[in-house]
View 1 (cartoon, helix red, strand yellow):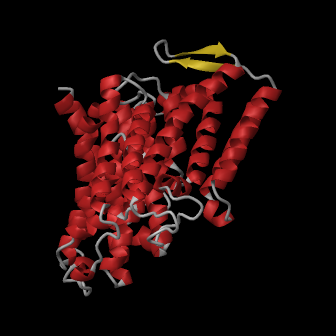
View 2 (cartoon, rainbow, N blue to C red):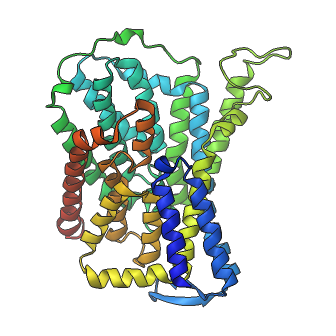
Length: 445
């Protein structure tokens, strides 16, 4: 029966990986795989276990209990993501991200490269790498008219955004998963991964700045960039970003799960959104037809209708599918076999990073959480956060940031492989080297 379980999982995984070829959204095989795996476990009355991290052994349990346990852990991540996505959409409702255009004051391509890279690195650490990439490529399309030049910028933005998301507990789904599962704490994650992530971003940007594509000036007129459509745009941007950054502090002080703090942040941002939008509406008509508020006049309702529910359902499916393998003890035994085959865990984790460029990093990290039983803030978890977060840059389909950039700019897979992948690889290896040196000689000296 375990063979059937593995076949179903691999078939579902393959369908997720080939979603662009099959033209089937990855949430469909993820949900089907999850339901089928748990159905097989239930119908064949297979034994299920809970991993005891302290004793590093498996303890028998009942299917209802273990399924409820995994659903609760998954729901914590999904509710957290729903809150963060809604805050980002509220900022966008007020056109807050247009404020970022005000930082663009130069026509030099090299200066613009550094500016966009730094913005991507910082923004992705707060609003996640996917959203940061969407925001910056939207601005890029208004600033740079030449498509070939824009492709180069987009490629570097992907690397910088993924590097920025790796060191922040709210910057990438995988780091959020590790943080919510109490594998890493916010301060220790930043202390261990920030400098390697900076190196991972700086090395490719420095190398790229010497390329012909980033020489000279751009043609468009910077002064023509329009201001935010709403007068509250800048205020809502800073309020929203501040509210998201507040969440790790809330968790540190209260020791409550992060989704509780995110719901508080959402409530605060939503309150100001309602206040600032009320002046736009009169009893007889709605002023400002620019917003799709048909059927309701609330920016919160509008923002909730815009969030990426397919992504939420995909995470639900893939996390509970991996939980099925974990509950059968398969991941635990696989980890033991892997440790025997490759005693050096650094090599294993770097292979995770390379693997995340080929297949989705979410199930990889979910699997690693079931494979290893190291304690909170063990360097292994910090290295996994770095590798899974930055490794995806090596292929354009290896990260959510890459996939969305591919769609927005119609970037060719092989163009990225030839021009950008080696830069991402050099940055990944350089950052990993810095991480190992810091861990062995600085932080644990």
